[in-house]
Image (cartoon, rainbow over all chains, first blue to last red):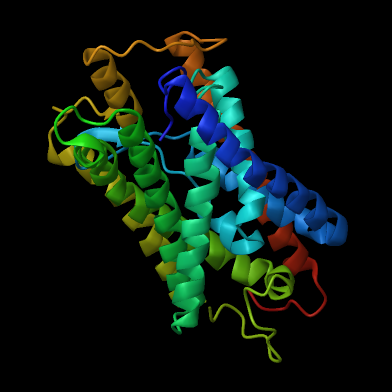
Length: 229
Length: 98
């Protein structure tokens, strides 16, 4: 999902930067507020940031014969709501743009919009819908983490299609082309990432019960039933 | 607790299988080129020239090292947090089980 440095026309790059900036600023304030009001959130915030840091560093092979990155933004979006991930995700992208020549500064806005805004919101939306429909915590987490991953790549495809419409079939044709590159490869990765999210939340439900109850992820249990999640 | 352990093991196995199977299925014929690079190559083939270059482009080996550093930092912090949370529960009064 990293659009490489200089690969978006200047107008598009500027527009996506303007679109992403308010989310990132709002996210920075959300992080400061969370840490100030709930200092014991710091550990889990670190875990959420670390999860996206590890996963986005690893290129994984897919059945299509290509490889791609997971995103790791889902768990943080479920735990702390999407604005927090707008900041954490952008920090990851900045690290990769500056040190790894992966992504770029001119495309930071577009990449942040896909990775740190749309992905987390799609994941959080899936989580809320699943919980609202009566799904348990872990199935909802799976849906959230997998969808945050997939939605990021769909957004990247849309961004590229808008910038590089096909000469004959226009934006729609270009979108199909870019989805063909990104989305198919990403499906097994999204499933794997969803399973990793489930593993993380299994560990958290046993070991971080008080935090999850305070964040509203788990209902306060009158009788602790060890590991029945 | 054992049922919980089995589920954990199965989940880990499923994740590993998901990424090892593609490697086994095609017998090592695919290059597994990155999708990001596939798109830039396609755009360049269509005549697009990037108008801005990365300020700092590490060479291949250094880049792998920096990616490993990124993963190590994330993995280290994640392990630290999970270890602390687990230790906290183990040390909590009344934590007899497990």
